[in-house]
Image (cartoon, rainbow, N blue to C red; front, top):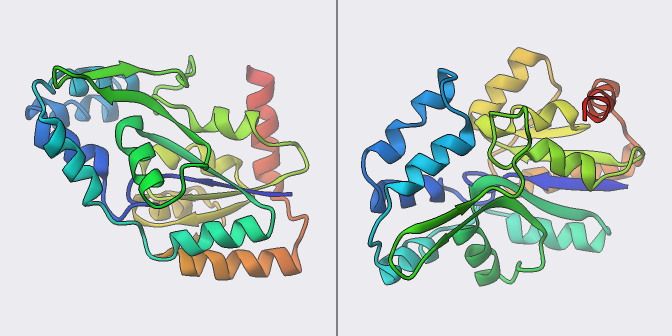
Length: 235
C-alpha cells in the first residue's frame, strides 16, 4: 500500500507560516536562535523554546488574520482528493506549530488529515504554550521527529512517498521509497544520491504518483528499506 507523508510549511503552504508568526510577534532573537541549530549548540526543541518564548502579548485577531491569509500550494486539494479515491493515506508531518496547521487545514476542509507536529498554541495572554509530544531522544534536527511518524504508521510492505522542501525533511527522505523534493531538499537529495522528483506544485506530484501506481504498484527502494530497519533496531 502506498502512503504519503507531506511536510507543511512551504510544501503544503506556499510560505513558511511559522517563520512569519515568529517574525511578526516575536523579537529578533526568535529568528536569530536558529543559527545555534546549524552550529550544533542547540537542538531544534531548544531553539523553539527560545523562539516561542519571545512572543508576548500577541493580538489574537492579528495572529489569526496572518494565518488565514496563507495560500496552499497549487494542486494540493486535488491531490488529497486523488489519494482518497485511490485509498492512499495522506499524513501531514511538520516541525512547525499546531497553532496554524490545524486552522489552515480546517479552513480548506482538510481537518480530517492526521497531523504530526509540535503542540504550540496561542494563550489568552498572547504568549505561546510549547510542548513537544513527538520529540525523540537522539534526534536534534527536529523537535517533532518525522522519522518516528513514518516508522510507527507504516508497515514493512508499504511504499512510502515523501514530499518536502527543507531542513527537517533531510532525515525522513532517507527512509522514503518515492521522494518529491524542492528548494534545499532538492540539493540535499542530489548530494546524498537519493532518487527524487523535483516539483513545483501538487499537480506534478499527482501525475508522477499516478504513473507509479500504474507501473509499480508494490515499489520499494532497497536503500530506504534498509534505513528503516536500521532505525527500528536502534530504538
